[in-house]
Image (tube, rainbow, N blue to C red; front, top):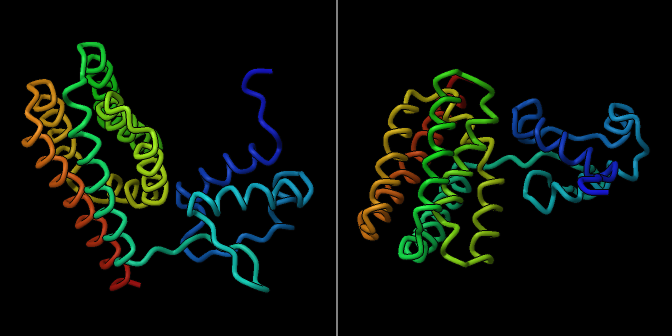
Length: 220
């Protein structure tokens, strides 16, 4: 049956959303018995779900203590975003020569939906999804599946912080403008200009997230 998901997959999907949505903070313990009761399943699918989330970098296991949500340090965040610059710049450079009117129209459609979601103030989870979808649409013609898989993994690791930036920073309009500029540079075939803007876009988002985290630490 198409679209069938096991109980473990269902638990993983829901728990992922709860972690990324901020219900569980970094360093929170995820007790398997409590989660099994919460989802009305045995501990086995919960364990499988936690292992899936461990592979995605959202959960880590500590010997004799169990599972905890990953707590990223500022140094780790900077490393993640530096890796994004390297990988996404590499992929975009290969993608632009292969962009067709169909690719560009798809990226533009996603961007219009993203703009509408931001303006309507709908669920921040959708904002993050549209952000990833827009970048993915631009990168699709590169034909670099291994690089795309690594980018997806990095985005999963950074997703809760991207949501934090979108929610708490005052830079949403700036991010929207940069997305439109990036699309136009890609349409023009301006590879160097697009890659420079992409690097700036990613690193400034990183700086914004670090600023938010440091402010939270000071206020704690």
